[in-house]
Image (cartoon, rainbow, N blue to C red):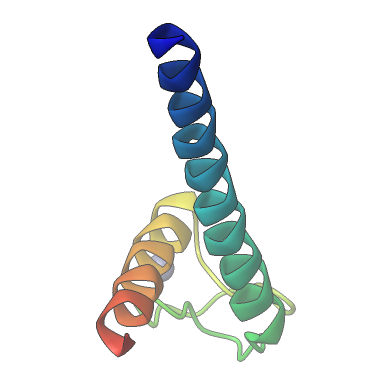
Length: 75
Ligand SMILES: [Zn+2]
């Protein structure tokens, strides 16, 4: 009986984590879609090709991290 309750709790925590993660990903996807291509990297402001928003994946990751932190601070 006790074991059963523990399993239910475990499942609830796991589902909550998944929901939080999904929410973060959705927010991230939305913010990236809204990001305009302005001809320069949004992270380091180096010039980039037409339609590009970041010069490489590192700048994109860096920008993502900071965008997530902004989101967390806004709460
Ligand atoms: Zn860059």
